Image (cartoon, rainbow, N blue to C red):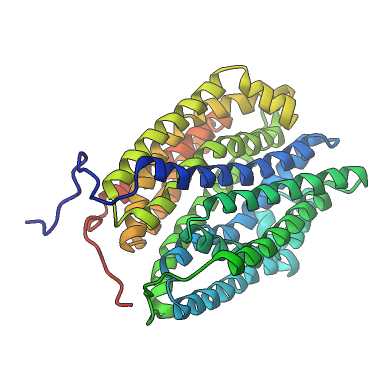
Length: 445
């Protein structure tokens, strides 16, 4: 007989719980934050699309970003970690030290892939590339390797601002990041920089500026909770929380490389593998604008979930309906052509494939939203290991389906997109089926 039961779907919010309007005022800046970060990627895609041989430049950047994200993605849940544990001076010190060590440790394998002789060979073997294309991918990795440590610290301090409910400030800071990317890209064009240098410098400059400003604002506005918590926090407790979220994020970053590795080896069709990779890079990044808005619900769970889980769930359903409807509306109307052609700058066969990818990707937010609800419960109850298990299941399913389609000669931009979505379905099933989600596991600290 179960020892506890899920909260009823119709359960009212407890007295004194935040209102839906308060949830909205907390959430909308975070949604804009995600959009700002992804718009930066769109501007970079647009910049590369305007260079000669745009398909090659986009494809090379897609491959380089895939390798970089294997290490950078582990840091995505750092804001939730600092939001959860930075509740005392001791908790602050432990989490900051953990962040620094984690950023440095994750930087080492990326630096090895970028600078050691064996690194390019492994990258070339993974994606089936060689020659000038491989050399350009490695150059990207060399330029981007310092970003991992910068990202770790940016995420850590962002979580503290979220805990303080300064989400509007978080959005403003990410708007500065977006402006820095756009400004640096424009300067690169003016100075006629190579595509690699243009994109890399824009990311490094924007990340450094964002870190400095975020740190300065934390020093100015952040105050520890009046009732301290986690005053006996250990590095083991932080690691127990972190490893499941890191595995989840790393597995997410592997999904694209798995698909790209098969696409790059597929028999060339009329468009060619390079154009297909370019279309998938642009299409996936565009769809992530909507996907990322749904990911921001995790902050709501960490901040408000223990106080009002039913209210958080109601808010999540309402906002998700609007987000999914908006994505479908953009995908099926001329708006997609305006964004992808007029703003991003892709055309011809790449534009045709990208629009098809975006249309198929409309299925993804529905699946992701169910997954994110159970991710929110896992973060709230600190059972993040099941998140990692689901992510491993996603990539196993992605690999199996991509390999099967490749063997049958059916792998193209549409079936590859469906493969990505099928992987998320598998992940959701694993996370939903995992036992114990409805039992809290309190930290001893």
